[in-house]
Amino acid sequence: MDIRPKTIFCDIDGVLVSHQNAGVHAQIGDDVKILPGVIETLYDWDLKGYQIILTTGRRESLRTRTEEQLLGLGIYYDKLIMGVTGGERVVINDRKPNSRDDMAWSINVDRNEGLEGVNI
Image (cartoon, rainbow, N blue to C red; front, side, top):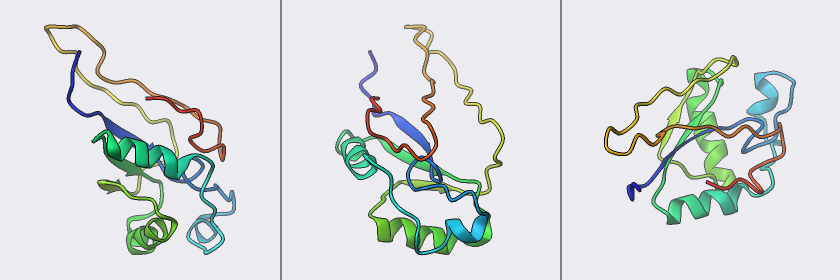
């Protein structure tokens, strides 16, 4: 079993904060709400030493506003990848030759349900 910390890739809108379904202006507004279990889960991942990489379909031109919004909500992370399309996301990784264990997997959560009950 590998004892190195995990890397978590996590979407923002609809997973960490409410997805407004009303375009980009709604997502960067002041009325975006943090979803259930988000702060507690991110805190737990941080204590475990996991690297937290946030992904979003928001445009790169919204980076500063997005960073301010996340900080204001108490959402901390290691890296922020912007401009990811709204299509399917696929993670491809190798298996370690000595264990043949899968080194990548995914969890899908229902939109706007947050991270309560997500176990990694």
